[in-house]
Image 1 (tube, rainbow, N blue to C red):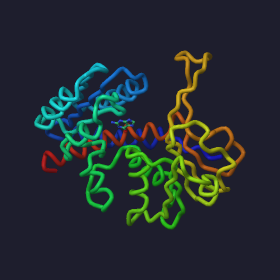
Image 2: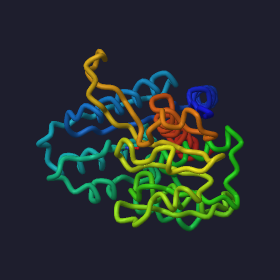
Image 3: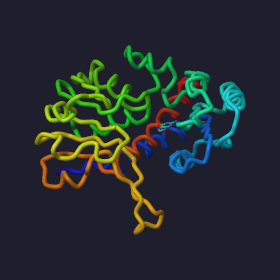
Image 4: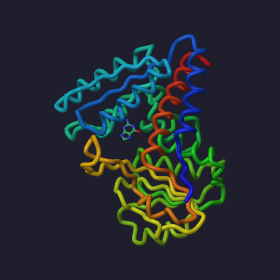
Length: 287
Ligand code: GUN
C-alpha cells in the first residue's frame, strides 16, 4: 500500500497563499456562519478559523442558536454581501431542518460564494467557465496532481452524488484537461463492486465507514477517501476516533495508493477554502 498523505501538499499551498495574501493592499476577509452546536460542524468551523488566522486573513464568525430564524440568517448574508471587507461567505452545512438550505445558499452573492455551492458557480463549473470550485473536489484534483496521478483516459468511479462532493467531483474530472471517464454511483447502484473493480481511481464520498475494502479494488488503483466518520472509542481522550469510508487497514498488503483519514483530504478542504478566499480577494481588488 502507498499512503497518500496530504499534510505536505496542504502546507505548501497554505504557505504560498500566506505569501500572496501579504502582498495585497487589503487582507482577504472570510465570514463563516454556523447555525447550531453540532460537534462535527463546530470542529470544521474551528479548523477554518485557525487556518484563516494563521494566514493573516480577516476572519469573522457568526454563530446562531439551533432555533434561529431563516430571516435572521438571510439578513446577515445580505449585510455580508454588501460588506467590502468580506471576500468570502461560508454557511456551514448541514443547517437545522426548519431552514431552507437552498434559499440560504442562493442568497450568497456568487462572487463571494467561496464554497462554490450556489447555482451560478455550480453551473459555471459544469460548463467549464471560471467559477469558485467546491473545496473538497478542488483539493482532490490538487492531490492527484501532487502525486503525479494522471486522470486523462482513466476510468474513475465516484461513490456519492452530493452537491458538495460527488457532483462537482464528477464535473471536474470530465472537464477538458482532466479527461477522465467518470461513473457516479449512489445507494441504488446495483453492483458497486463491479464498477470499482474496473476503475483506475475510486473516490469514495458516501459518508459511511466500510463502504469499500480491498475486495473492491484492482491492483495498481488509487483510492481517495473523503469520509470523516466518528467511531466511539473509549481509549481516546475525545471518546471517538476518525475513520474514512474505506476500510484502510484492509489495503495494507495490496498494491493500492490511498489517502488516510485523518491526515488526508480533510486538510485539503480547508486549504482550498483559503485559496478560494484569496482568489476572491484578488478579483475584488482588481488583480
Ligand atoms: N459541510 C460539509 N462539508 C462542507 C463544506 O465543504 N462547506 C460547508 N459550508 N459545509 C460543509
